[in-house]
Length: 216
Image 1: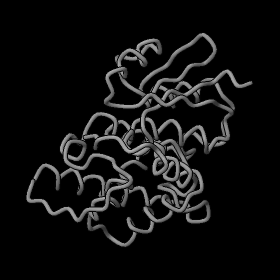
Image 2: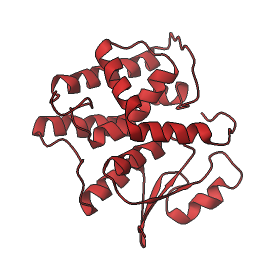
Image 3: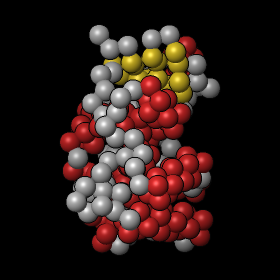
């Protein structure tokens, strides 16, 4: 029986939970998952034992607890034998880490106005310069990654799957749900992500969840 357990929120809404979940799935790690429903009266009580500051995700590794998506990914890289981590090329790895950290700490307009909701289909038009700035910045970084891509390795940001894809895939859902206009190369990356079998599993699970009030 696996000693790894990932504590996550609703798959329809929880972008932070998706990140380590996808990273673990792509690396074929044996782990159990436990969903704690967001925005319920018992959420804080249920999540409290897992060491976080009242948020998901959290990883339980035997007697150890790790929380925060990026911290969980880093912990797994340190402790597990993995096929996919960061890109091996020095320049690719530097960009992958930087864009992941920027995703982790930035894009407040994107987060507040384009919350992740994989069931949602909505044409989104905005004159908000901050939101458009976030969108343009992400497209610019993805385009930079594509220019460094190993075309033979696959259709992820840098060719083969990496931790950067795990960190950025939730943005793919946001762009897709709100019909954000993107260049063809970005659309191709989005289609690649959405066709991935592990991503599809997350989507299917999210659609099967009991529908709760919209989150975000």
